Image (tube, rainbow, N blue to C red):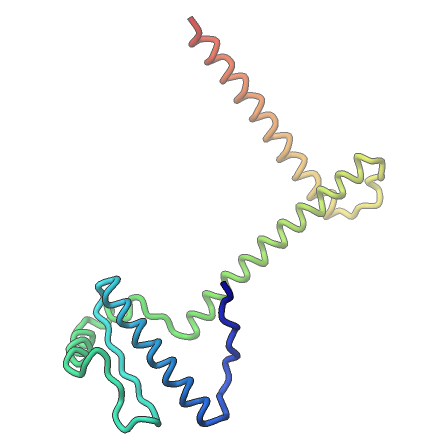
Length: 168
């Protein structure tokens, strides 16, 4: 099953193509609002202004849309804005997530780099060619591995002791 090709988001210069695209997307948008309303039992309304139509398209109808807008406006402002996100807030959140991913990748790469250096040392490469950062990171990784090994050995001994006590 082939998916749709990615659409380049740019102004459509051709008037006929633009109008056709508008109509398809408007209908798709209305369909999505209907689906959210039915599947999730969420009150939904939409108002679409267009240069192609003299009156705005209002979904599901004018009275229901006015009722929902009035209900929204009557809510306390704190409640109304509780889950709203400005463009700036959205971009900051995205940047933070990407920065976190980048930091995790840097950490993973550094660990792999140190493991490679450790493997090279095991094959006979001297430590004298390494800089202080490499040596410090290697020391930390070795300590973590040794500590993990010691904990695993102690855990294994305790499990063996428990197993021996529980045998008849």
